[in-house]
Length: 90
Image (cartoon, rainbow, N blue to C red; front, side, top):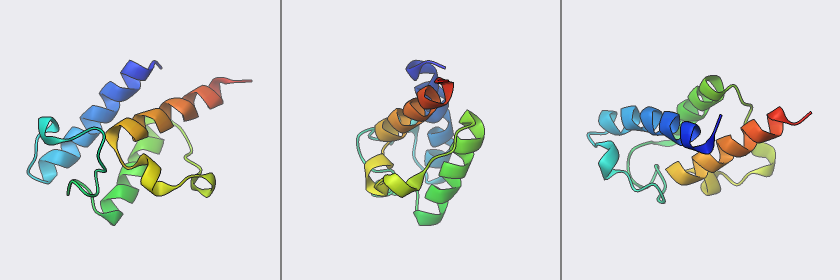
């Protein structure tokens, strides 16, 4: 899966979350935290992570990650792309 494909799928997922918060995808700043933008709270963030793991068939290892580093749309896309590339290595 390419970075563009990951970002397109991720945008679709986040768009649904934004709509639930009364926003559109255009209202979402891809560089800012989805939490501080009011799109997600701590519970819905965890639900998002579970949805991303299921959708992209990845396991996100939080042990070596700082959660504040992957709460934006851009950082989530980078995280998923990295996870996918690591899984495809023998």
